[in-house]
Every structure is written in C-alpha cells, then in structure tokens.
Length: 224
Length: 88
Ligand SMILES: CC(C)(COP(=O)(O)OP(=O)(O)OC[C@H]1O[C@@H](n2cnc3c(N)ncnc32)[C@H](O)[C@@H]1OP(=O)(O)O)[C@@H](O)C(=O)NCCC(=O)NCCS
Image (cartoon, rainbow over all chains, first blue to last red):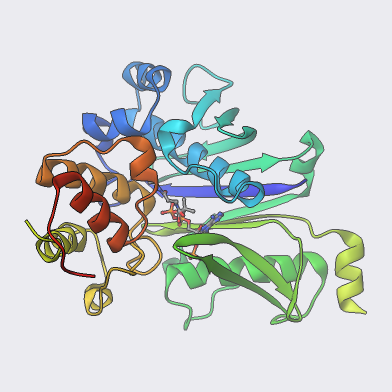
C-alpha cells in the first residue's frame, strides 16, 4: 500500500503568527510530550506548526486507507529525529492506525511536511513542491487559476503530466465528498481513475502538492 | 434556548473565520464548515474552543472530531444544553 499526505502552513498568515502562545489551542492539539517540546523550543511558532503540519500530512495519508479514522490532532503524536528544529528533518507520526514517516522543511515564511506510508524506497518516487501562486513563478499556473485550491490542483496535474510524458490537459485531479467528510483527491488520466497517490494543501500565500510516481504499467496503459 | 437561537449563535461564531462572505449567504444545517465555508482545520479547533466558551460546555476530543457541518454543531450543542426544537 502506498499513500502520501502533505501540509503547508504559512507562518505569517492570520491565526498562525503567535499561535504558540494560545494555551487553549496548544493543549487541544498537542500531546503532553509535544507540549514539552514546544516549551523548550527557540522557535515556538515554527515548532507548533511543524508538529501540526506533520499531524495533518499523516492524517491525509492514513485516511486514504482508513477513511473513518479520527482527524483530531491530539490523537496523533509526532516523534522527530532531532531534538531541535533544524531547517530540514525527518520523523514519524504515530496515528490511531499505525505510523507514518514524515519529512519537514521550514523557513521564516512557511512549514511544509510530507508524510508517506509504504517502504522507505518510496521517497525516491516522491515529487513535492511548495509555491506562491501570486508570484507567477510556477509555470503551470495560468492567470485564470486565481484561487489557491485550483492553483495547487493545476500545478499537481501539470507535474504529473510532465512526469508521465502526457500532454497538458489529460491529467485531472478531482475530489469527491463522502457524506459530510471530505474525501482525498484522485488523479484521473483521460477521465480514468488512477491509483496515483496525490495530496494537496494550501494556506495563506502558499500552495503545495506531493505525489508518488504513477505506476509505470498504469500510465503506459493509459497512453496506449 | 431553542435550536434556532443556537443555529444563529453557531453561524455568528463561524462567520468570523470565513474569508469569503458570499459563502455565508445560504448557510443551512447541511453546510460543511471545512468544505463549503473553506475554514481551515486549525481554525476549526478555534471554533470548537469558542463553542465551549459561548455555550459554557466542554467538548471532548471525540465529539469535536465529529463536528463537520453546522448541523453537527447545532445538534450537539442542543443536546448538551437541553434545547427546545427549531432550525431543522
Ligand atoms: C483533510 C483536512 C485535514 C485538510 O484541511 P486543511 O489543513 O484545513 O487544508 P489543506 O489546504 O492543508 O488541505 C486541503 C486539501 O486536502 C485534501 N483533502 C481533503 N480531504 C482529504 C482527506 N480525507 N484525505 C486526504 N486529503 C484530503 C483536498 O485536496 C484539500 O484541498 P481542496 O479543498 O483544495 O481540494 C481537512 O479538510 C479535514 O477533512 N479534516 C477533518 C476534520 C478535522 O480536521 N477535524 C478536527 C479538527 S482539526
């Protein structure tokens, strides 16, 4: 089973900046040991949102396999490989249904985390990106795709197209809803549902995506 | 307090977290807080905390996890405060 999740947090966005001082929020979303890590951190906002992004990325990956799993962040425990908060590091998130490996990257503007379920070699198959749609830097974004959700979707579809060598427009990312629960996005190639694991995220100025390389046989079949 | 009153209070709390006000035009019991109103999941935690303060209740993690729509919130709060009918 292969599954991917990703989450981006804009550290300057309304509601993110200074949030590490909101004790009620912190106590609701972090476990006791995570609160301890936060208390010792020299970058408390980045530390809080790194743990949050790791939990969200893990939820997005694991909920593909267990759609009814709890999404409550306090039920997810982050275990980071490094006691401090280097700009780039790895770790694990223990979820109610097993653990998810995560890799994080942060700077003054944002935290981005990708979570993977599957063998460790899968990291080689991963493509992930974080970008600011407004700055026009991402070639996949057309001016009409103003909305950040559409921007993440368009960029991910274009990157999958690039990866599989498919012409622009054949790859689409769609999302369905199961009762009141939102369902993960799915990749469709020429209208056909594929098993390519993909994840989208957007917050504040940033949009992000991650996907695992489509299985060779599958994309070859789609092209023929 | 009746359900209509709770509905109005719930919408009043949530509206502060909705960036695109046009999305509030047709809110109903079925409206999904995350998907329809585009509230992000961190702000949903803030909303749960505000429900606790406004209605003077404690919402445990399992119950909080089940609040996805306006109706989920209204029905849950009504059950906790013993509300009369309305807003169905
Ligand atoms: C999946 C979820 C956690 C993401 O929320 P978020 O952090 O606010 O938003 P992000 O931008 O990082 O991610 C949104 C993207 O996740 C994807 N997504 C939605 N539901 C998903 C799911 N069940 N699994 C994987 N990905 C999902 C979608 O592609 C969505 O983008 P879109 O709306 O533009 O299509 C949230 O939508 C959700 O369903 N949460 C469950 C309820 C919950 O969180 N309850 C407790 C309060 S924390």
